[in-house]
Length: 244
Image (cartoon, rainbow, N blue to C red; front, side):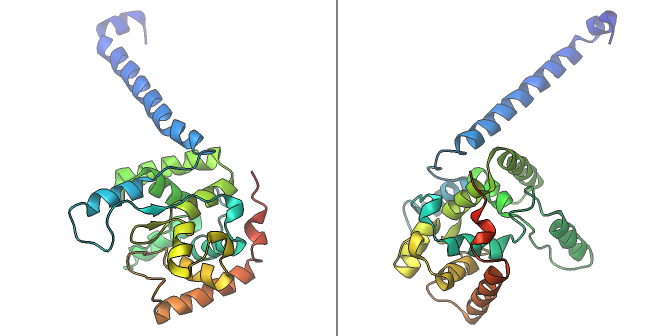
């Protein structure tokens, strides 16, 4: 662009400058919390806050603040680590945040008339639960993809799984494996057995519908399926080498 052109169209320069500043602010606002949570335990999550606001003034199964207690990686039973990977995202140690094959299959099945099923990885679920609301929209999906990219670039796999285990919802108002272990098995996250861990993992697709305290026949079958896949993946060793 020549000097004469810039003089004739000063609004273009202002527009470009404004867009550049907005992009820089967006980058800083989204990147900073991701970098901080690389080391700091999240005090809460967007899903916890959203559910707390939703239940204010309503009669639900729980009232008040969500039950949530952070526990470090080494205080989570190895069986629980592999259980959620076996149940939710078996390619987790190998992918870069997105399971492209599963996404492609889900889209193909939907175009053929099937229901649109989810293909979210554990990394995507961390991005969604930690930073975003539960409302479905293309904007939210775009932001989810952006936060997933930032998380995968900034955190090791072990940290992603550690955060997921701590913020995942296991029942109404019950967030994280420590609260779930105490609620449903009267034990700590560190002491969970493989069957207990697999049963907790069965509720993750729909924690408001499935109840680990009263498992249905489907949930028990699903638990046994998860246990088989935990063994087929090689047990806890499958995720034990994702070091900091």
